[in-house]
Structures are given as C-alpha cells and as structure tokens.
Image (cartoon, rainbow, N blue to C red; front, side, top):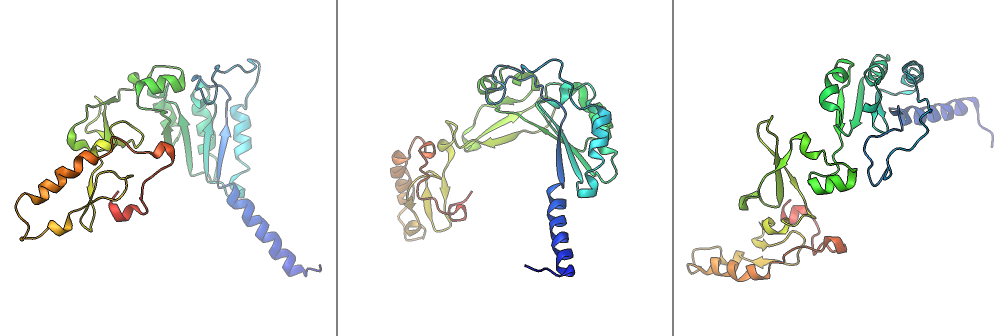
Length: 259
C-alpha cells in the first residue's frame, strides 16, 4: 500500500498520541521488601537476596525526568512497602521536583505512618492511600500476618437497630464516626428493609418480590390493616441473602428499589 507523506505524518502523530496517554501516570517500584507477610502476596515473608541493590535516589531522579515529556504528570512510589526505604522522603522529593510532575501519590500499609508522615508531607507527597485489608481484627491478622489493627485506633461500635446494614467505626483522636456497608457480613440483612416508590415493601435488597402495601394507603383502609400486613410479612424475611451463591434475587436496577 502506498501512503503519501502527509498520511505518514498523520499516522506517526496518532502513534505518538497513544504513547503519551499511556504514560500519564507512572508507578515507580522502589523496593520489593515488605514488612507484612500477607497471605496473598508474601505468605512466607520477604525472602529476597539481602545483597540486592534497588534503585537509588539519584537513579530515580534521572529515571523519572524522562517521563513528563511523554505526558506523565503523576508518580507513585510503590513496593513492596515503600516506607521500609529510609530514603523515601528523598525519593518523593525527587519525583515531586521533576518539572511537569504535579502529583506524587503513595500507597502504604501504614505501619510507620505516624512517624514518617511529616517528612513525607514536607517532601511534597500530595496523595496518600492507606491499605487496610479488613477492619475486623481477626480477619486483619489472618490476612496480613500481624495483629496491629488495634494500634491504629479504629474500633467497631456496637450496632444499634437504626444503624441499618452497616458497621460503624470511631477513633479516639477524631470527631464523628464512619460506617461501612458490608453486604457479606452477618448483620447485613437484619436492617435491609425498604419501601419502593410504587408502594411495595422489600424485606431484602437481594430477595424476591415484596409485599404490596399501596392498596392500603388511603382513608378507606380500616385501622390496623397496614400494620397487620407488615407483621404478617416479617416471618418470611430471610436470615440472609444468597450472594455467595451468585444469586441476587430479582434485583434489576437499584433505582427501582433504592440504594
């Protein structure tokens, strides 16, 4: 096939566009070492060659300098667990001070966060993700191989009936609390009740059908009939759902029954 010069130039420009978008965001592995023997990654702990020399601060500075020209604006030092590198603040600074880099993010298991976050912030870290495999202490210990969840200060609160299908957590150093919807947790179905915009009572988000109440929503309804129908339906409420068996009931759209 014959391609004229103008067409060839357009083709090259198209390839350049693809390359630029591919390097918008670069993860920079600074270590393979991790201090968590997580069952899904390092079940036996890190057992690499102790003589291995990972990239130095100088090498990282030279390395990342070439990527902004290809469109990169964001860097993420990663690992392993990046905080095991004593040079981490200098590495963050090397990336943050690279012309064209607007954001430097990092994901950490948080083991050393309390001691290091000040230096990391001063080095111009802009975004931080703290990976927490579970907020259940037993599950956290099983997954990560350590029992340090309690040291982070977040504790689960006792559930109240009005909490719905969620688990709330609080920290003694902060105001308020936050909650997690845990669809695979034991209490999920207990508080999962909703009334649809069409007047149907759903006793489970992932259940079947529902109980019609709309025919009772007028002044002609005898007192107590609405309450009686609701009470009649409650014994049929399942103790749980079947999501683990890939059965989500007759749920089609969340907009139909409420999130």
